[in-house]
Length: 237
Image (cartoon, rainbow, N blue to C red):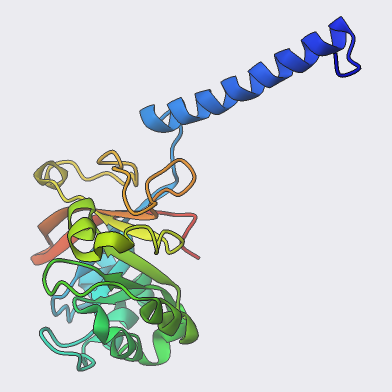
């Protein structure tokens, strides 16, 4: 049979079975979280924060990434607060990134970082039901052309509503997942696999796991409302 003697055939079959068993164990491990992704605490905010000591205290609390809304709320005008606040976060030891609630404002959102653009970890293309603007290939390529990594921010429910038949066209872009839950307020831990990932858009599979998750809205940190997140530390550079 195929030139194989019985011992050789047995070794071949056993090797084939072990291979599939190994794949099965990896999938099972992913489902039941037998492995851990090196995670860090992150915050996102659209608030004015004028105090260096605030960022220093947040860093002391374990925050390692600050994601800032970079244009004036309700417009595409670059926000004058963006560069100074990013500078304070960097000085405190944090890494930085930016987003705009309307993804059409991506260019001015990046420009608002000014001289700190080269320090941006990413620009988040924010796909939410308000304002309901879908992602486009031009947004992704435009962000990349400005020397910044693009990521997609969305959630399973919002992505389905906004993207329609184009659900998996952006699976090659890293996902910052939205799954905020009240319980994160009382016990915030850095774990990009918590809450458990829900597969959508080609993301949150064993081979294409999200790189960040928004875990709680409007947490008051040293007097300032922020959203709590966890990010894959290996994605940050």
